Length: 121
Image 1 (spheres, rainbow, N blue to C red):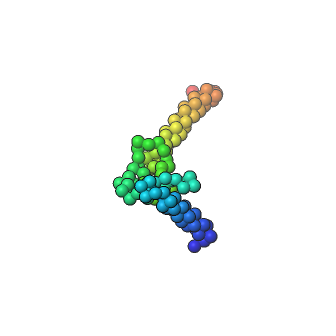
Image 2 (image 1 turned 90 degrees about the vertical axis):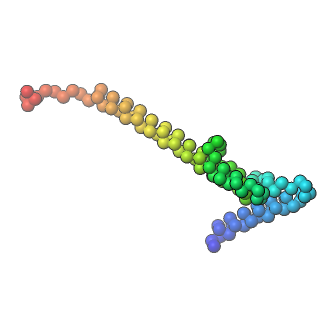
Image 3 (image 1 turned 30 degrees about the vertical axis):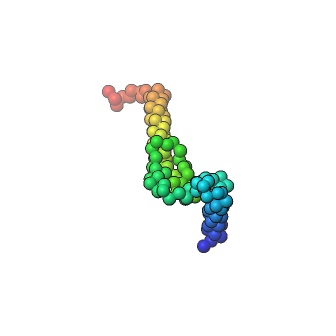
């Protein structure tokens, strides 16, 4: 493993250990196994496994990044990504169409009429 990989593994391991330590420091009745450590969300409640599908495809949410249903960090909501990509594509298409219409109108207005020659007759 390269140095960067070791660094990433170390950060993830440290955050995971800190999250577990944070929960174990609470009285057993107050442990939720869900929260934040150093600004990073965590959720170690295994009864939320069915929520994993919603984490990665949630058309009801506009948030691209959502806290993991189980684990440490964030997941990507691909429904929100797809919606934004469709909006960008539609915007680009309408921009291109309006430029095309404007340039075709400008071309006909600025192109001088061809003078009639002897060959046209």
